[in-house]
Amino acid sequence: LNQASAEELGTGEGAVVVTGSCGRLGKRLVRRLHRVREVIGIDRKPFVDRPSDVVHHELDARSKKVREVFKNGVGALVHLGVMHLPRGDFAEHHARNVIVLKTLLEHVVEFRVKKVVLLSSANVYGPRPDNPQFLTEEAPLLGAGPFGEIRDLVELDMVCQSFFWKEPAVETVILRPANILGTVKNAPSNYLRLPMVPTLLGFDPMVQAVHQDDVVTALLRALTPGLRGIYNLAGPPPVALSRALSLLGRRTVPVPHAIARLGIDRLFRLGVSSFPAPELDFIRYVCMVDDSRARSELAYSPAHDIESTLHAVDEERWVGSAV
Amino acid sequence: MNTRTALARLTDVATQQGVPFVRRLVEGARRAAEELELRLLGPDFESRARVLFERDGGSDPFGFDARTARQAAAVSAFFHRMYFRTEVYDVDRVPAGRVLLVANHSGQIPIDAAIIGCALFFDANPPRVVRAMVEKWVATLPFVSTFFSRVGQVVGVPENARRLLEMGELVLAFPEGVRGVAKPFMKRYQLEEFGHGFMRLAMESQTPIVPVAVIGAEEQYLSFGNVKWAARALGIPVFPLVPQLLVPGGALPLPTKYRLFFGEPMRFEGDANDDARVADNAYVVREAVAHLLRRGLLQRKSVFF
Image (cartoon, rainbow over all chains, first blue to last red; front, top):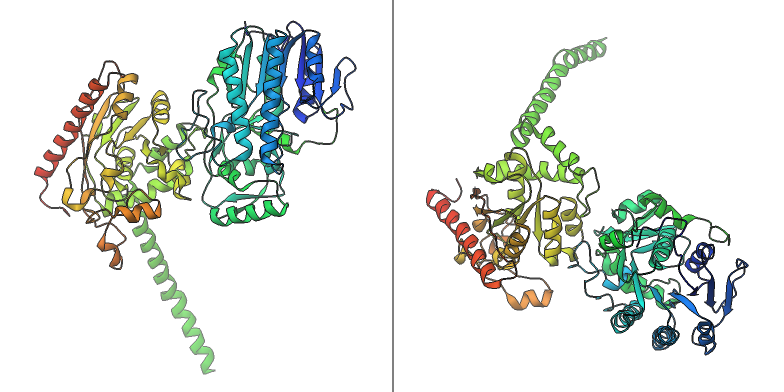
């Protein structure tokens, strides 16, 4: 079932609809997927250097026309188009993300799409002082507490989970990767790209990171016919945050937590920093996952070691065809 | 030239008597330091410390760091050998492989855990690293949380203990929890109720349990009770009333004599989901610890010697 070799990863019947196909991760997925399978991209942005056999729809995911895309027979849906704008209006942001997913899932049922893959995140578990060192898929999703944006992600994950139970005919896969590092624009990669990295004085949690290409591989593996479930993705063995930063050769500034909290909050309000203050907990407490299920059932194993995963954040970001 | 001869005589004195004197002094100080080090760390410290470095090659998922652990061992050796002059009985009863140590908890700050760690590092053959289950609140403390994880301590949730036991580690649990540490002086050596989590783990993973009695820790800080409202206001688990803290130097624990008694390994079988069975077994272990405590207290002539 899951012994697909590297060449035939992602094969299956019918086209794959990829939402958020122009994101940095989306592009990487599309570039690998279109070699084995028909790909239809949906994104608000134009796909500038699109491979010629990829169909691209420049659509807002809320648009009625998305239904038309599904009409012509679709084999799988990969949902990457989750909006993360820490500064946006929270209510609108939330409604948008949740409504988009729910509508997409309606299309999936209506047109009998066989597979749905949602890229969630290990952050849905939340960094907490009483976390076990490695969280399994059964752990409660407590990340929502103090974090606005993660609340969105938790709800998306939950919508997908109830869909998983409600529609046994659809093979639903939820991937919860640890911090994705690479040219992607997400909080952990942006944090590691800072020229001077602030850390919390006296705190040095163990951290996990996954290379963006390992996540793409996992997404392809998730498309294997017959596979359904929730999978954590952990990447290479964890390291202490301080070790990660020294491997990257970053200069660090340890700041006491109380001061950091006030300062980051001020900076965020002023629009100088894009890190909301509650995210400090990610460099304070552990939030690591146990991915043994993905390793046995998805045959997932990260190809990148910790050094190349970390150094991926420094790769050239502005070359479009880097894959 | 009077001054010149005077100076010459001065250099004579400096080279012929001063230098050898200083050299003797330095030599003496070095020998004393070496002797102290030998007395503290023992002749085989380096070979024991090698165990720390060999055990995982720097990839412990809980953040254990051999270098920090080695330093911590050297510092706690002072407390283990000189300050508390620990006497360790029957440490060879701890079997190889995964083991759960269950001990009484006391003393306002968990020095008992450090001393048990020392006993298994300095007095057991081969030396072993103890992974103690730590109160969750500790993870919110800067420095302490980092230091604890570097020396192998782990946040006390069942998932972590299960993983450590699977790794074949030596896990130390205090089923009394915070209630034990915060015990007032009047209640010394009276065991609080045991939690049942440790027994559930031992039964499902068929891990032998070694009961441990720690004697001496309960007198190190004289606590006259716990101010609950102050603890709640400060967001900490307990606020013990310890008058000795007001005396200069009173922050150090009293130099009581520590005695550690290791019991025979106990094995439990059966369904770990059977709560009544788990509770019964936990009670059996509690009685075993209580028995070791009684025996130790009868044997002891003085708190300090």
